[in-house]
Image (cartoon, rainbow over all chains, first blue to last red; front, side):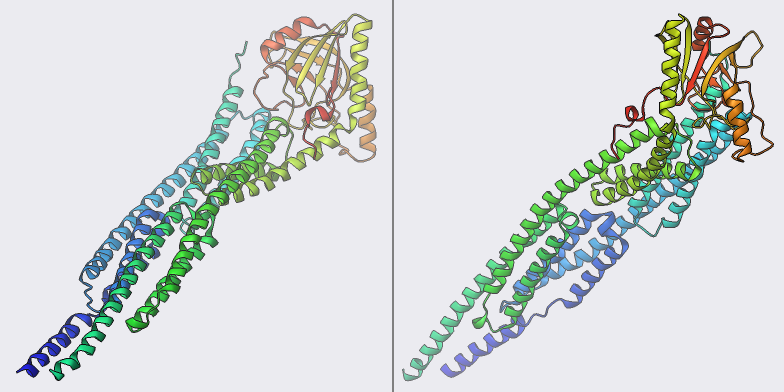
Length: 201
Length: 370
């Protein structure tokens, strides 16, 4: 009787070890969470939405710490961690969508800016066309013509790099070119207005 | 009874094992807390832009964190009795220190970059100012003008990058701008220096003109091409100065008709035109070409420095319709119509007009020692 009592206790202890101590690592969930994070990085999340991306990687690191800690225990239960990993996968999808939206927004801004630059270049050329036709007017405008040509070259360079480097850099370049052509256009308008006004007294 | 005695050592062993397990488990929990602190410190250093401004130190901190995790996993794979987390604690301590150092270095490097950015920006702005105030009026080939436009774009881009805290790229852009700018300013500087080689001759002409105005008690007009000024002297005393505009090729002494250059030398007013006799509001015709000009023209034609078919030209005037903010004449000197009214009233036919490259030496204009 006593013997069977001890046997029962030992068997129960073994059963507990089997059912709790040998809980497996949620490896599939870990892999899919890592893959999801890598996918957001590939989409450019670390560049375009760095705060959200850092929060995501921080959550992943925190879960991995918790898993490592629990893995050392005799009675393991990764339920919480598994849930967190699944949540990271869905968060990754959100961050990826956020990244894509940001990229699309920046791309749109770059495209708009390039259109504006092209428009300003055309406007500057038209202004040069309207300038006084005599030698006097042309002389003063020759230098400005060279400036407009230089801007056209810069716009060509911008179109070449657009999409190959990050859109923040491209947008800054576009803004700088736009500011330059705008100032040239203003300079042209001033010169032409001075040449056209004859009643100075 | 004997049977029960056998269970006592087993129980004691199990009890000891339980306490060891409990101890290791507590150590493990402590390590978990420490690692969480490490991670927070690393995130903090990243928020402090250490990944950008102290990337090497930041990477070292990350590597130390990874090492902590690596050794933690290794220890956990061992049987709990032999687990030793001291190496993990060492790496965790190291990671915290490295993350803190990365933050500090980031602050330091950011400060240095900001200072370097300000210094480079100031240098570019000085060169830009020099160009806009001084060299902008100098006739430049298209390539130099294009370089200057490129400079302006790079400068604007650098400012935008700096606003986004990308000081490293911003400095790169400023340095690129500086290269273009130095190239175009050097071209202008060399050109100006060569032009001022005649300064002594100009200075003599001006002194002679003022001295004669004083001795003969007459009015004298002095045109300073480089300074874009027309000075009116009466009895040797400066009474008025006017802003002027010239032709595109103003930076040479006139050689032939159509070269868009303004002659340099000693002239006199030979005609005063108004009321429809000039299309430039009012005009004072001078006696270009004088004997010196004719002699120089012949010499240049003989030595082939001007094409044989070229004529010496004439009809050089001080006239109105100026104030356009550009050099636009065919070689004449343009004043605003209101200034022309004033000058016209103060001079007579025969008034000497001295046209020189500059009344002031080059050092007066260029303070920057190259």
